[in-house]
Length: 193
Image (cartoon, rainbow, N blue to C red; front, side, top):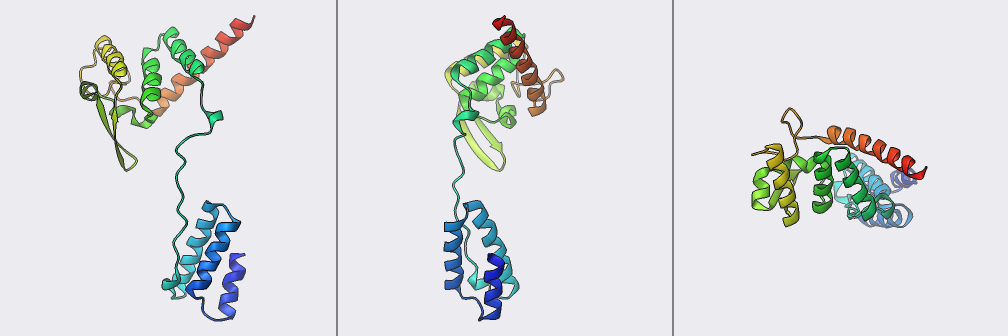
């Protein structure tokens, strides 16, 4: 459609801004925002190419989705079972990671920002993906993680570290979650017989 419209402009007169705005309106009604925006970006590139940058239009604003679909979330009971299974498998670190992520809403990639120093302040400043966020840590979490740090002899730096002392990354956690998932499947299979 866009190609035909642009070709029509070439055969007739030079495109004027009002025609471009009409076309933008048409795109907004006919396509999803992301598709319409990609067409507008292409159109703007073409307009600059033919020497008509004054006809360029802005893309549609798109609000980022803050919440996930409900079918991608786990229930409170499933969460409790995961934490308990991690404990049963002797993986306190994973149990504490699950509790930290669920009580703060941080991403796995932001776990290295949970430090002993942040626990003392009950606040963590996260600088990740070009954004800075400050998260207040719940009192119950600071107590839980403080006890964990004392037991694991972690005195400074990141709370969640590997055996080599490096902060955990998504690969470590993914591997442990897979083991946890396997344990849950075995537990469920044993419980049904």
